[in-house]
Image (tube, rainbow, N blue to C red; front, top):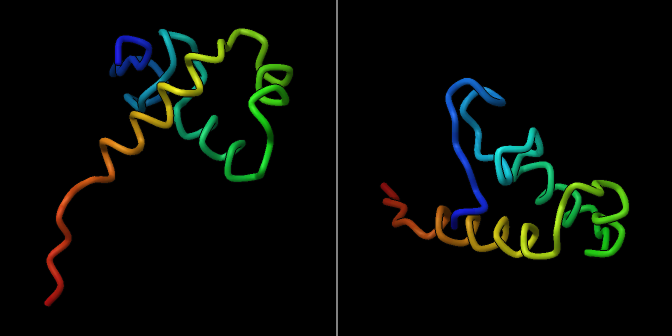
Length: 70
């Protein structure tokens, strides 16, 4: 998870990729819009394939929490 950085002074403290101003949510939204990994890499040339995988791992780990239904 060293590819995901969180800094209070960058992007409002939102998770970014390797200190770049590319947020994890930006990559996830591109994936949700059905762009392929190759298309994302073309759109954001500073990214590496491993960065996209790190975004998916980050999202999976941070969404795995219990939800209490009342």
